[in-house]
Image (cartoon, rainbow, N blue to C red; front, side):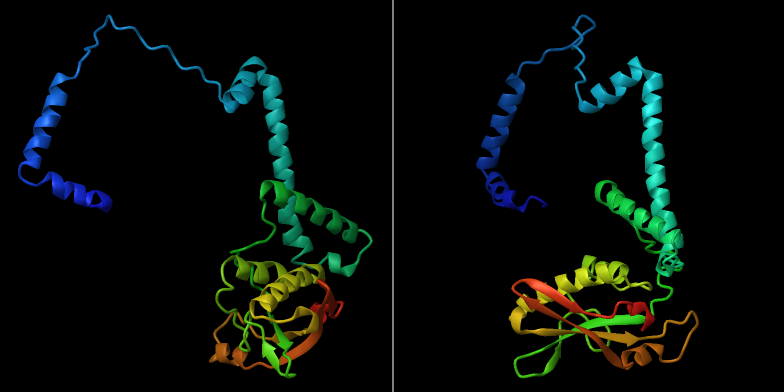
Length: 268
């Protein structure tokens, strides 16, 4: 039943006459095949050689030089541990406590070096630099950003990304949602990251809905919301109706983007 394309063949083989002919033919082939019984005198097949990359590099080397292999393997694990600890400490202390933002002569260079190391570990090892799904991951998410644009008639319209209620619209879910909520718009907004994703969103949706990017002004809107840890009556609709504030603009010229945004959005 799962291989439905063979169903017509099965119907033909089940027809009277054809079925009998097929059974007799199969029985003739099965009875005439050569059977070679194997006893204790049969030769044992030679063992296949293991020439895999894993066997040549790891198993053979570990057998010949076990101590050297152990030392190298330990160094690799220590390096991975250091990279993981760097990512954990960076987002557990520097990012969450906003230590680097204080521009301390001690903490700022350390935070910059840690952030550069995170880019390496993320690119080559996939160590993800955010605390997704931890209990306090969304603590401090009290701002929503959206993007509007001015059409040819001078009317301000919402880009089909975040609507006037502050909801992310389909199909901007999944990885796009994760990108916007976990990297661009976070409790401690980084202007470089935010501008990077504003560039992607305006370039994609601007062309998608037929805008001339060189003649379109995009407006960056900010809405303050409340996300209490306790129940509040009608909190959802209160956040829906919260007012928007225009905090900056974005323009394109010959495929180059220009930003007019506050230096520190976190202070708004």
